[in-house]
Image 1 (cartoon, rainbow, N blue to C red):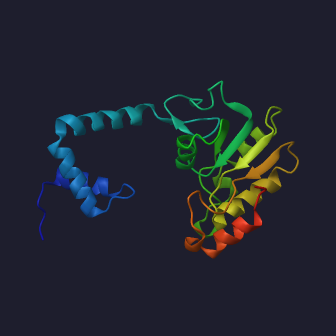
Image 2 (image 1 turned 90 degrees about the vertical axis):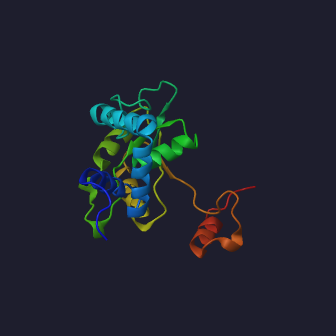
Image 3 (image 1 turned 135 degrees about the horizontal axis):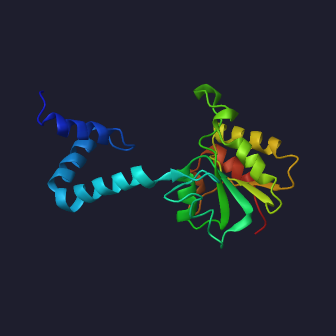
Length: 200
């Protein structure tokens, strides 16, 4: 089947298809919707993308992305400087913020250790984390990393590096999710929940 649109529209579709969660068909629908809603959607989106391109930067303290540096979280006086929550990616930071899960500050590693993918300690911001952990005001490092092999390998690696820092190192609990039914959980989740049971 030949192309049904000019090269400019095809280029828009191809770029949209690179976004996570959008395949070729979804990208075509999104492109068509943008074109139909040029005034209401495409022009404001184009403007917002240009502003993001010009102004968004990586926070030199924690690795978050923001339009100011240090970021909004790092400069918030209501944040507890004694707690640093370590996450693999900015998406994880945003998820914790949506849940209003902590009033601590953050540290974004950039990824997790993954020898198979060629990601080693030098590719992450682990050295900066260790330096931050040695600051006098820091008392706890919370490792909010995925419960995957790579996430847990990274957690163990960081824990070893923080042995001489005067901080408590904790991690997120693993186990039964809120609203979860035991019959539907996998064996790994159930065994983790049983090992990490708490007083009722």
